Image (cartoon, rainbow, N blue to C red; front, side, top):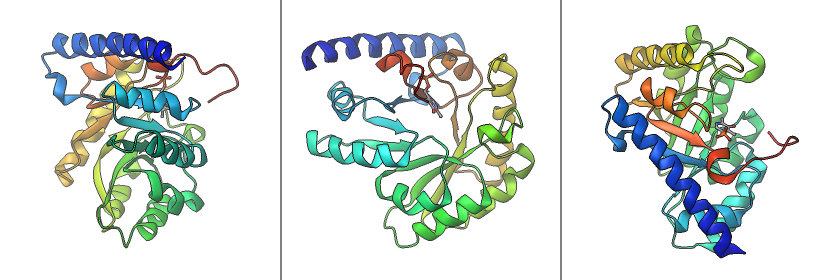
Length: 237
Ligand SMILES: *Cc1c(COP(=O)(O)O)cnc(C)c1O
């Protein structure tokens, strides 16, 4: 029942909004400084459409194939909703062209080779794609992210691409560790980047479990899946 589902989503959205409000208030930040992205991965287009009915139009996905189909379906279900789609997952170079067809913002750019492929895929765009550089906070290459020491070169490459607009950094907290020092490190990297690239003001950090800590450490964008939509089950990413 879509009315029941909508009521459930409205409830969880209110709870997440209350958490964001409290976290902002606790450190004297304005609520408008923090974007809320709904991570709709593994959930159907109908859920994404209901979120737009509730006023949440910043949606995020982590797989190109699923996202492309879902974005098209949401556009069909809600032709008037002004959805902004965000890519937050690992991205292979051969998907650069495809992701450029549906994403308004790519938060997971973490290598020169990927930046190069995206630059090529977006040369003829009218509106550039917003780009965040994904930073590795645990120096584990398996989990994605650019090492802090290689961030400058990556930023330069993105900044030179006419079809890309460098907007800041993104990170996922290390697994099973206190997120606070990691988010502090991210804030430091973001500050250094901003000195070279004044337009790179975004810090995308914080998910269902750690959004308060991230907001305390300067996050301007929290990416929330589970706390809005429910659990994804064991088999899903
Ligand atoms: C899935 C995902 C999220 C959302 O995680 P939750 O814990 O469900 O809120 C945030 N960021 C990225 C990169 C993700 O892949």
